Amino acid sequence: MSERLQHGSLLVSFITLVITGFMLRYPEAWWVATIRGIADSVFDLRGILHRIASVVLVAAGLYHIYYLLFTERGKALFRALMPRWQDITDAVAVLKYNLGLSPHKPSFGRFSYVEKSEYWALVWGTAIMGVTGVILWFDNTFLGLLTKLGWDVARTIHFYEAWLATLAIIVWHFYFVLLNPDIYPMNMAWITGTLSEAEMADEHPLELEKTKKEEGYMKVEVEKESKVDVQ
Image (cartoon, rainbow, N blue to C red; front, side, top):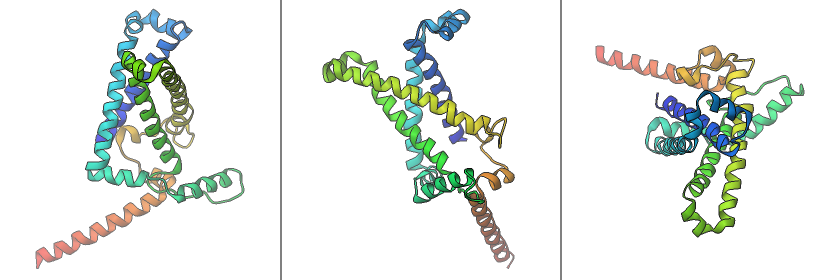
């Protein structure tokens, strides 16, 4: 549940940041005019909403760090998300499979190289957007510390990282979660927190094999304890 709540807060804050951020950057765009026609108050409050969403995003990020470092499930999640050499060989194997150069599709564990890439890109992007966002928010302070040139550099980085993050989510993440023909109309794991055995067998067969082994071991241990209790 905690991971789904973290994802939900990220989802809402990110979408709010994208909409309000580009509303600030492109106030005369046609879609901004449409929003203004529907709810003019949203346009007037876009700066405040952008800052509120940024605080939520940063708070979610800080809690996520705590979750990774100080909870058992978080520690296991962090270990599973660490990049490994296997991720590179898996990427090459997928490329060969998609090009018809290999008949075998590689098997993945809890996270594939695609999911790991998305995760660490999110970490990097959140850090960059957080730092540059603070610089833009407290402009009077940072203009004195960084000069106008430094502030303009931060503004440029913030703008292009926003475009990069938005396009990555729309083109990459939304495809794998919503539009991928293998899971269309969507992968329900972000809502339910679970995958069916068939989905696990197709997408994460190594994790399924590991889970079954652990369940079998636990079953044996429970049976042993039961026999001891009877005796």
